[in-house]
Length: 175
Image (cartoon, rainbow, N blue to C red; front, side):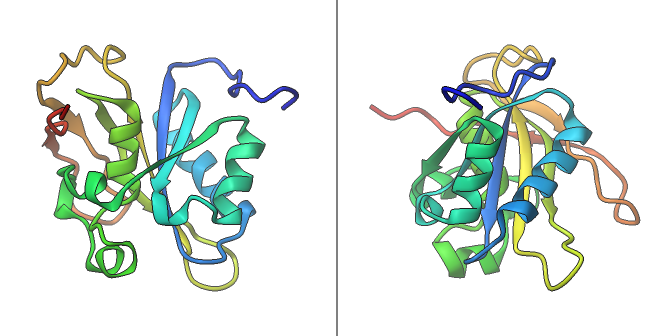
């Protein structure tokens, strides 16, 4: 987009957390973000990830193509966010936090954020999945009150356990 800025498609702002393996292709990230955002609706306000992936070309390129910032959070910050299912041992071993996609989406959206779409994995035509993403909405878009838990519905992928409401409590602010 000329001059940067945000994507101008109609709809509420969405914050997309993205996890990625080393060398992930920009096209794989973009395809996953677009498919996941289609579940939530709205407009990408920012991509977010763990600091260790801040220079990953596939993530940087995807943010550039979407015309949004790539926000990063430390593994410590991400570890402080409770997510459905508790996260993964693979992410913990790789980058020092059990959740990247869901935790980054929630932190980027701010206190009282609501997780709209839980972690999804990419499905490239060749090779294994190298990207994950999740989508959150900022306070006010769904009536969440500052500092209070939001009831969220994390849709399950087809063929898995039934959907059920889950709670997320935003991390406490520190000075």
